[in-house]
Image 1 (tube, rainbow, N blue to C red):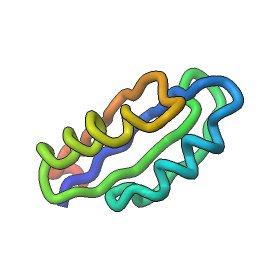
Image 2 (cartoon, helix red, strand yellow):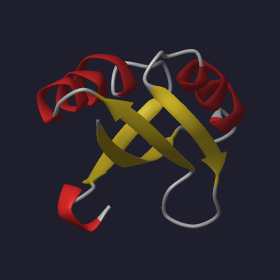
Image 3 (tube, rainbow, N blue to C red):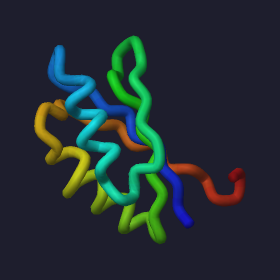
Image 4 (spheres, rainbow, N blue to C red):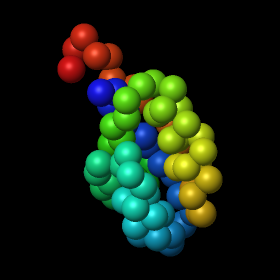
Length: 79
């Protein structure tokens, strides 16, 4: 199992809308609002790093009101 954290920046005043949509995605295990540069902290779990890449590029980034993402993949040996 691969794990990654995604830092999401959304349009102002749409943070809750984005969070609700992200939580509907199968591979999203957690989503929390944050203060600062990023608006939402998302944990995703998938079977491979390729699957994580697909989730971020084809689902999370295409979610309405998402402006940008930064993906932090976990090093399996340090999990």
